[in-house]
Length: 267
Image 1: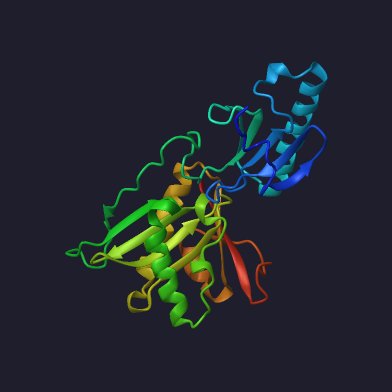
Image 2: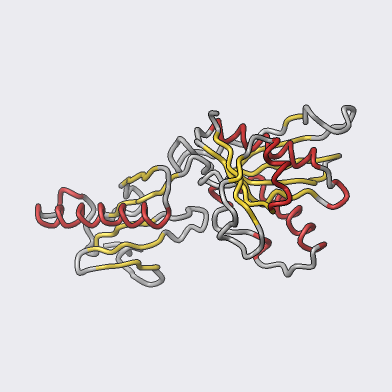
């Protein structure tokens, strides 16, 4: 028998296991939250298992789904079994979000390339300002360039290029002025609006407003029911003008006087 990578338990990140099967975290860093259940013995087909073992496998599969639903709170779970390249019985358990790069297609589909469009509400009508919304893989270099510039100004230490684990399943907005990326923001799967940044030389409410409106439009397309943002109480009037409602006295995310402003999408 040829060497089987699923038979060799070398560098797996095991969540739990028993004598018959194990749950591991997928190695691909771009597949956020994806797990696999692997049958320990080298078996290629589900029908080769005894009835008792099939029952055990499906019981563990359901428990794994419950675990992933609770931990990651996705919009949907996909479960798939192929084994064409590695003919060893295993199941992919894939949390899905309406904001992930493939939605509503499978993660084996190609990611759609983002399209840049002229900024209709540009501060300078004669300029070639562009705006784009897309996935992390395609906009990562632009977003990190803006984040790095902003945090360098604020003299914060750079860690991992200001990348977090939710970037890959979020939707990102970038504005370019004269081909220079100058503003960005992102929409979390939860509807949270985060990391709206406008570079120092372009600080203007209009650019932030354009990003905000683009995110809200994207949330509608993704059929999210609401969006929310954490901002200082002093900025409340601005967000109220944009249709947001103050839903808290203080955000749990910070010890500063930050409030949570929520906008219902279909109101």
